[in-house]
Image (cartoon, rainbow, N blue to C red; front, top):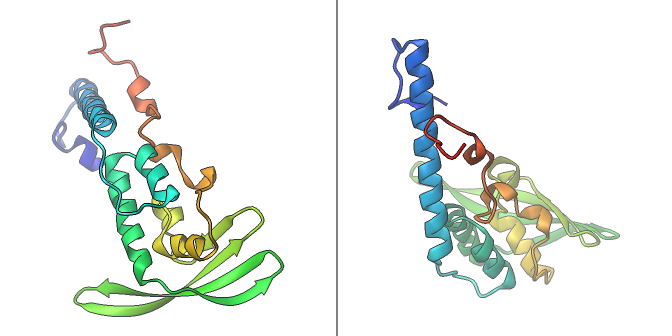
Length: 178
């Protein structure tokens, strides 16, 4: 929240100035969003993957989020998941990965639970829970299980370029349409 207001308010800002500056900050945020949306719709970032999953994310996600997803897609090349156990339609995989900690590479083992029936997946790295995008570990599990189409539950509205953000619907003093 502080970063949002940094250039608009300071410790000695009074209430009236705060309201005015809040209005200015909101206007700037909306203008940036509109500009970003226009750019997302008018320019296409090339996908490094030819998979239907990559193509769908390219069409739906904002540029910034799609770039993050591309990093995860590139990481799938290094993944070699191994099946740890199977219980009916539920599988648990071990996925070895290397992460960079300061200047060193650290080997880490992640666990990915996959339900074949409803395509439900959960990785111990927690990237989807933290950032709302699927990690390379999950994408690797999808690949080894022949999943070609990403279930809708893994495409959050928050990152879609075709969804209007709620804060852009807030009326402000600069908005003379009403």
